[in-house]
Length: 159
Image (cartoon, rainbow, N blue to C red; front, side, top):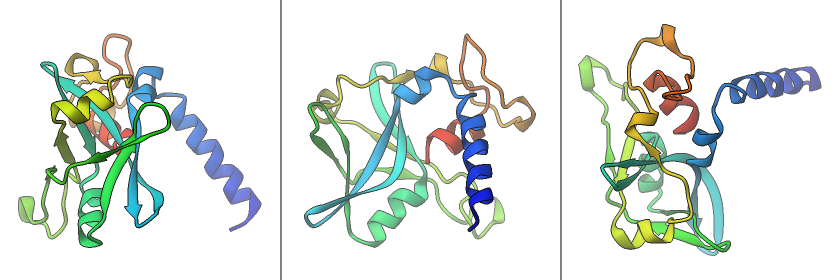
């Protein structure tokens, strides 16, 4: 890949990133794959709290691939530690709406109290921070709710 293409991609990423509010960045965590003694960033997730119940939301393909490789996942915790995530994710599936693919590609993990406590210093988005519509024409951010469509939320922050 030429230097020009790398510079162009970098410009595109910076342009996209400029539309994502700071609150959303603070609620984004690296999802790290544990491979023996090594850790590898495998995806990203968004921390979300619904009625004081904390969740992590990510792309289903991240969870499914880790499961296929029989690997555990974790997220950064406090004081340069890592918090191992339980394998109790709920994932969207292939074959919905007559397709052979997964049209939603979303996974949600309800955090147990011990895991949530280890992430207490992190920022969690609330439902009133996110507007979940499927109107791709309204993919902008507003002050009262910083994400106005689920595709932007899950597409740019959840993977």
